[in-house]
Length: 171
Image (spheres, rainbow, N blue to C red):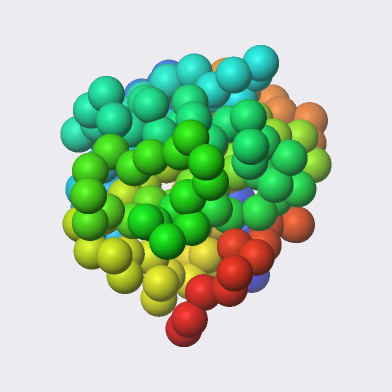
């Protein structure tokens, strides 16, 4: 079975249940696998709205709220944001000192459907992460945020256009 068919089968299996529950389970796997402190999925409408969260606090909500006005265009272009003390824009903060965070766009085709936020205790958090490993997870989250399951979604979520942060990530 080709890898693309295997990924489609995985997405179908994951979406067999209620979309919010699928997103919650997917987020929990990501948080555990990548040793995150916290994680959240937001829908991306006029402003991000919390869809599901894992070990989040008010600081996570505030961080996402703060980055939205300045970084929305980058996320719509498919760029992954890496936030740490050295690259915050004016008015942006992280939930706690010593954290680093990644914010992934959740795309359906070229449309921004949501955001995946994860953070870690180390300032080096996310520096060695291969974003391609997240493709199946982001497809599941895209369908969940859109409220669809299985093959009901007309345009399958794509990773096309998702790019590493402009500052680059050391591998």
